[in-house]
Length: 215
Image 1: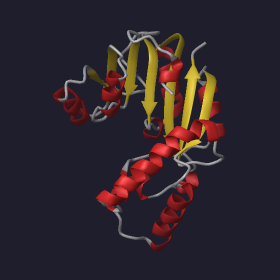
Image 2 (image 1 turned 90 degrees about the vertical axis):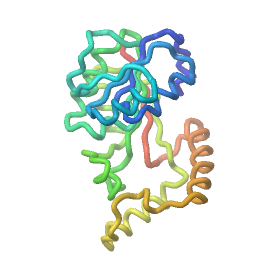
Image 3 (image 1 turned 135 degrees about the vertical axis):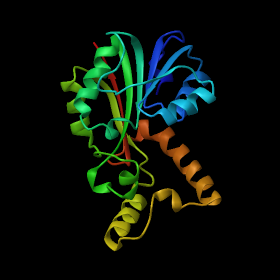
Image 4 (image 1 turned 120 degrees about the vertical axis):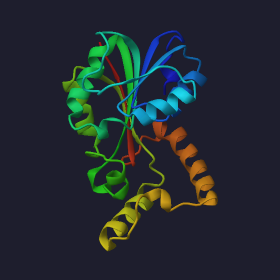
């Protein structure tokens, strides 16, 4: 999806919720030259620093230490659900974007999928498409595209989470339900999923992707 935006490689880019740097590395691999990260965790920032991924600033996404219209592209991958005031975060993203700049946002979908993983990850909420788009529009954005993804495993994930919640299985997080061969299988399922979701436009999915622009 970032490729389809045809961004010049030298534009200033901000990765929100940089974490341990996976998305900053991905952006570097795509050839972008001016990438900056932001995270509220000293632990995460040290991870990125050790990997030599570039500057990661420590700050709150609702009060970013950047001037207006600093960045041409913002990546907010699975970040908004961690923020108590997500509308304020979206308005901050709008503020730091240059006119014509875009943001790619991903979030977990559907509150009825709430489970132990959401608690472990300290989520405040899950989203549906309508309310996510409404929040983006209220923040000042034009919505260019949106769709659900991780749809191939949607029914299985829904059943497993409902069973875990119903029977109160003592599970610290869903990563415990894994093994190398399961992980390999899921990797290929998810590859097919993310390649086809923009064309299939499924009615449901475990996650949502939203592309917005500051007009």
